[in-house]
Image: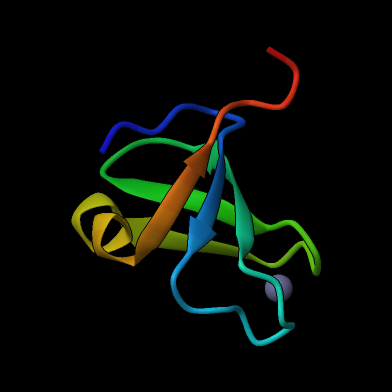
Length: 62
Ligand SMILES: [Zn+2]
């Protein structure tokens, strides 16, 4: 899967806050994503993220 800055991702598993939507903040060996609801940021390896993402949403302002 290819990720771009600002993309919104829907994960299979919900975050502890109850939201399943994340925003891509930084791309590298690890990808930094932020929970849209509680703003918690986490780093995930791309291969790991690929297994967690259920759906990709295109960038909101595009
Ligand atoms: Zn959250």
